Image: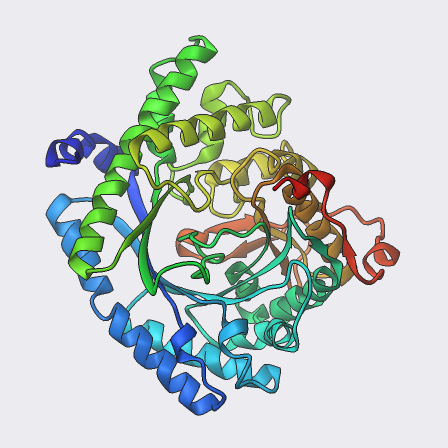
Length: 454
């Protein structure tokens, strides 16, 4: 049973070690909004979100006040819009109008972000899927709070290379359309393999079709807490190291469980999952890279980095599942570049390359995340990077993702600035050898044989 004593025990973590509840995300099904008339569809969507989410921000603030736990973001995820708009939308511009409706609804209820401007195309694309994907650059350029995701592959279906190729051009166009803001639109766009239905973190959150009409998912983050705990066991054995991470992850998850249960009760919405993710911020002392250094690396990227990250990710999951019966989403350690001051320093020191980050994604919770690359990188190169990351997820039966920012007008060594939780990033070099003939092939890469277990 959760009680206030468990929260009292975490005061030190909250006040001095950057523990926070990163997000309360309210998932909302829009399946009952489907209509063949676009104006009626938009009206239904706006009314549904307004009705379900009207108290979300207020409840979040009340929980913060009651337990003195920082809740950084209040967010909404909705059913993938490619499904919801299929009957009404006849063009990419029609889908962009729905994005405007979502943005207006997010602002009206006061949430930070709304996710679900999404398409699930791991095996093939419908006409509606393709229209939504082609509308993404316009949608993200013309809205402030809408986030977009596309699932391009899965362990069971393989990788949809037609969609991978298309996303190369979509990401480039999104960067160009938001060039006045350092190509910020790309920071709100992520592509997945094996995307989970219950992820509360942006930009990848959407409300899966197997979910209830509405649900509360909570994302907790505490890299600073883990780093501080490890300071007390320097030089100890791997057994002691692992036990320390597990115990810390347990405590952090219990805080999330309390917040989730309270939000569920106050909003009268079912509790979904806790996502325990070591998601860093640009703040000093809130870095996954610093944890890796505390484990014993001079810099992330040094030999041993992938092993250290695998250990960290596994122990975080083991501690989390003991603290809550419903741990889900992307639980584990994130390794974004722009959002982690330690990762930025490692890149600037020459210790961390795109290729090493790709190797690390084999054992982390997401993938190549918030990485700025030169603005003149080709569409084919972006598609090739996406294909590599999708392959890692497909073969290893895990979620992987790519959130690249081809920073318009920027070159290697320049910096892009996003502000807030998104931070800043140095522009990283990309392999200049071509893959055009590879990504030009049509069709899909087949699923690996182990996907046929049933």
